[in-house]
Amino acid sequence: MISQKTKYAIKALMALADEVAAGGSALTIEEIAQRSGAPKRFLEHIMLELRNAGYVGSRRGRAGGYILIKQPKEISIGELLRQVDGPIAPLPCLSRRSYQRCEDCPDEASCRLRKMFGQVFWSYLLLIESLTLADLVEEGGLPEMGVA
Image 1 (tube, rainbow, N blue to C red):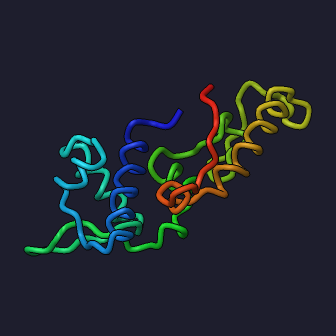
Image 2 (tube, rainbow, N blue to C red):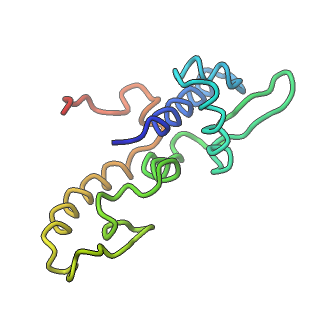
């Protein structure tokens, strides 16, 4: 599962993308909190992380606030998940960026757990890596699906 922090980060980026699409400008932290449902105090930390990661910029002054500095189609949901929550692999031996050999596994090549979770994870990666913020904010960007 993704963390609440990641959900708030995605919702904040969606609010900023919606504002850009409507021809608007910067949003204050209060406006982002109201639109995303995130607590303001928690959101301040998230927005700082998103700014440091290069997703958003900030403006000072009367018309200040946060702005999206990347196009929604350039913001990968998979990359965002990693940025906010860290590795997304179900096993450390499957992580591309934070690989670690499993301590209790004598042989990765014959590990049945690695093989099974690897197949599931690669399918998940293909989907999550193909999604962008644009898919979340554009009407009809995502197909309807059932809830598991």
